Image (tube, rainbow, N blue to C red; front, side):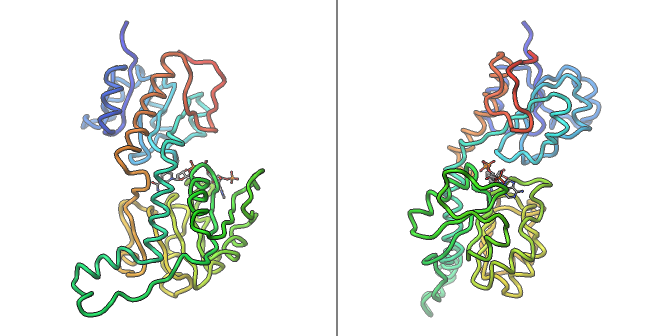
Length: 324
Ligand code: NDP
């Protein structure tokens, strides 16, 4: 029996390529200079796609070239790279890689929060530059007695909250809905949460519904002792408003893992000594990226073995019937 044709849009980790090579007839789009020509040749045969949040969009134009597509397996828990409305309209299942990265992202978030408040990267630079020989490192702000507001108390938000409990700080949250059985204070508006807290940790999905959720008004409400930590998506924070708020000391500082136009980071942020900037690494350990990669492959394998998708996104729920 001939193997099912699956398309990979950009190079993924060896663990994914090896698993898909074994199970399917894997087509590597990025290896072809004339992609349009290549898609014309193989497009109608393609029944599955492996893609990543990091590379390009899966949109109507691409779906149009793949008329027999059944499933898109996307690397990453965020899937703002895939037009899920368009996929749903075409009965294409979209899967992501939730849960396997919760702990890693939460660990990194705590690291970024502490690094930002206690100026860990700045202190490291200070020592290396030989400045400790001249004077002790200046005293830093603190996490002590802070009120932390989590914007998006989902799978990862809850893992962050669990860790924060060990730090004896107060925790509150904002989302579109109050959650049953959650003891943290709920704020129906983000400005309300920002007013009540002096740290905001942003961990919502990206995409149109959260674009610039954190705007100038929210930053003003956070106040001059306020700290913004963004590990969600760059689009969730109005970057221009953030730069202005940092410049004018409307807020104290920020720790960022994500940006509006990655991998380009505004020069204004790079030049600000008080902020801590990471290159989108929250899930980026070998252990966790391998687990995410395995789930990309497992979703495709499960689907084409007729077992259904393992982790379909909410916009393309599985009705129990496979097309296979
Ligand atoms: P979940 O779907 O479990 O949680 C998302 C949370 O966001 C929910 O609590 C939801 O609450 C809230 N939310 C959604 N839309 C809005 C909105 N418009 N306004 C306010 N709150 C909103 O997702 P995960 O916890 O698994 O992942 C969250 C996101 O983290 C991912 O989508 C991704 O963008 C980002 N991420 C970033 C990583 C990095 O490398 N920096 C790594 C992994 C994830 P409600 O429905 O009540 O509004």
